[in-house]
Image (cartoon, rainbow, N blue to C red):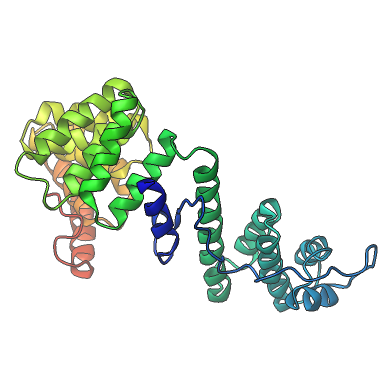
Length: 329
């Protein structure tokens, strides 16, 4: 019953983040933002609709029978503003009818054709929120006592700053399923995030991350945080091992490459540091710390000209960046 109450509370929160709108409810479903309050009679069956007529009908609430025409309108050679109206009203109608396949089609078409249109982006924010809420409610109705439902509840509690109930939720999952993938990682992350976790929070979190990598050695996030904890303790060899593992598991994990290279620089293994730092710079071109550490590695390896280019980029970025942003020097 407690879980159900939390899910109900979550469904009433604003859609500021993905997690905060993933509400589950067995008896707390709220009216959705984009859906119309009630269905209206459909146009006559078999009637051929022009795009403008379909848009007019849909805007009046006549959703049945208009969606296919609205999809064709978005793919047709009609004025841009008409396509935009067709996409927005088509998305609204799809949500009204709970036609999630069509909603996905309209989202894709709107993203493709109006990727930077503020009106469209505003509508898409609410559409994603609506679909998240409905999917979470599906989970609550079909499997309220499942591990995914409890994980979702714990994440919702975290978003509300309810650290103790969230921690208890994760611990409850692990009591039932000690080897549940990802849960030790989430609990460890909570312990590091919780402002009142106590002086032993880092040590407790480390144990959770170690348990996670025993269960799932391919959890790049857990490997990375273990690397960060080792780096803070200046345990360079372990940090290098953890960061390199995380980077090899996820080739787009820029922070892992940066941590890897930084630790190699700290150990004065400058030549070895260059390749991971080059990847970090490629993935995060606007990060002054990545350019700085690469510059140091290049300079100490005798590559003075390349190093000066990186130092120049680092100085330029630092002038534009807030103090301490991305600092790992």
